[in-house]
Length: 117
Image 1 (tube, rainbow, N blue to C red):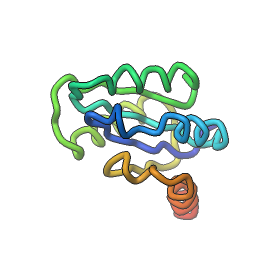
Image 2: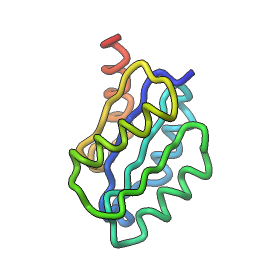
Image 3: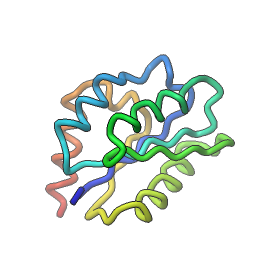
Image 4: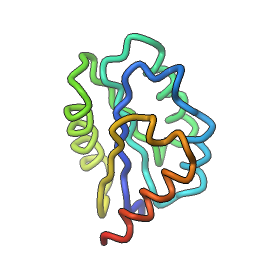
């Protein structure tokens, strides 16, 4: 069972998203799910998110918000959908994909959230 879900709002991130880093993190952390929320992007972000999901469909959830509603709304929708998807012990979220630019940041935040339980 996955214990934590990390919700990441994504808006026009196709040029910034480090697909390899994210996929590597998902594979090496089986107790963590990633919920990627496309927040009305006008570039190829949704397609890229779906490609990531297809490599790990049990641990990656993609939500598509057709209209941009802002980061807070994207996180809210992501948490709601993830809550209905699986039974998690806790949630964490990133304000943007910039926060996952370093592999160690993902590990530190996941560790910190696990320590809260």
